Image (cartoon, rainbow, N blue to C red):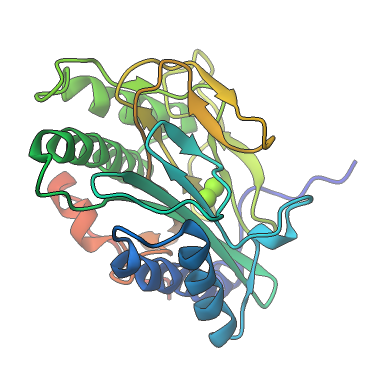
Length: 282
Ligand code: MG
Ligand code: MG
């Protein structure tokens, strides 16, 4: 069987810049709409509108059996939540995953937003901390991609970052990392080889070298690591009912350095704490 190389040419990497930016813009369009009273379907529609305006199409809609532009996962749902009539409440923690395909190339990115709630500062603090730790672990993985030799180093960096944070300062509980769901290569298809584990593995994994494009996407819980799939056959929720958070960026390693395709600034702000400066793809 023919297997496409996991390493892309510089020209192919350039083709991935625009779908990355469109994906970023779609999430930017949704972010300010996340407030009490909005339905997840309304958020999904806003993402779809932006993607179509930019002359792209939703790659989530190209996944067999899926009709939406985003996955929106609320509270104990971690990933793959289906947009619908659910009305967001103050204090909800909401993970939004979205992707665009443009001229045959794909972007994939996710953010977590906590809906403001003045009446429950403790709940908001706990959920914002979970989101911060998850986002930080994603940046730790992206930073590792800039210098690591093998994919396994990247998973170790993500897990290491989460462990360094220690137990939650608010709840005292140790964070969990989903094991059954992982990051992936991305390119002509949204999901390509190799798998990107968010934890240490015995196998060093593929070599990290220019041409590699990865969707790095830690899925972290405020408690246990066990999940189940809801009756809708998509939504992945925690067994113990603790909250989940999901952050994701599509990232290219190229001849001159690293570039986060789904960030307007190429990842400059997120990578700064790690001493890594992104370089645009020439
Ligand atoms: Mg995604
Ligand atoms: Mg992904």
